Image 1 (cartoon, rainbow, N blue to C red):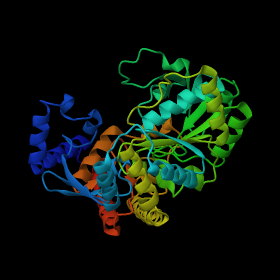
Image 2 (image 1 turned 90 degrees about the vertical axis):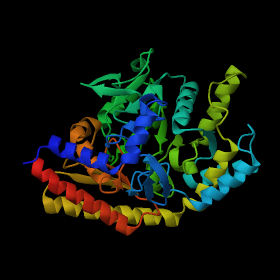
Image 3 (image 1 turned 120 degrees about the horizontal axis):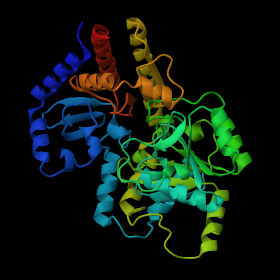
Length: 447
């Protein structure tokens, strides 16, 4: 029986032998980038060194060694609607020729605001540069309008580079996330954490009357994919109404759920909604929308303290290039027809993966919402982050991901997320399923 460590070592040797240009570039980069990469997360792929991307088109990515990959990561969502979209290329080129940043609104910004209102159902919007920026702004405003200091987060959720959210549950206690760099304030004083799908813990926290806002993904997507139990969101809404707590949904990942995002598609009611990553097709941009009631409370809070620097927003927020990207995505790319293709592809992928799992009798499962699917090393799939963490075997994850890379398939690092774009062909789905089946055969030999 082959040991997992031996299998992984062989996959690393295969990668190194077949990616000489990538390995050479990675070595040279150590002299100019900390850790050898422009952003440290680029190291989190399973390959011995990160792939060096040459170009990407639709749902295919090519590396500098000439290998083509079926891309189911899609930049971990920014390129969810496909790489190199001609519509976006034309819009960006046109706006770049007219200027990209004025610190002023453009005619297109009015159109984007109306498109956001029509699609997501909230009447008043603001721009940010990233979803992290949007979530930070929302947290500040939530505290201002409620005059409460605490924000409730879900254990295992991720809301970007937001200090307040870098807390988790450990042995039932709220602690800082492992690896949190340079933190001097005690985040546990103003951040509350409860498990996903735990309505008792949620109610206990909200009944204190100390929570300004609940911030959550409607479906957990970063600590593996975890679906809400029946009635979860409805009870959450009721509790927020009864306790005067703002309900904030972060749709940065669950935008893949459908044309109006998860909240609109499932008839939920948000006080605040944030969206980033794919909203401008990968051009750095994010938006956050509020109800008319919340907007009025924001105006009152601002009037009460008078003019001055709010500390919210950056010079690049809402710039003309970002607006052009959002207009194009909302009006030409993120169409109902595109979502129909994506959802049909995801359903096909899920059906085929489940069949392979059943055929080979491995204790795994598949979870999906809209165009996003997740292969989980547990059956049944966990309902909270504590259980999911136990299922996310880091060595098995590394082995699967590197095996797939060596066979021309990319899925998101960190866990097993697979995203279908409107440019993903059925044959790419079949290649992914075949590669996963090949790994399962190997897995049964060393499990």
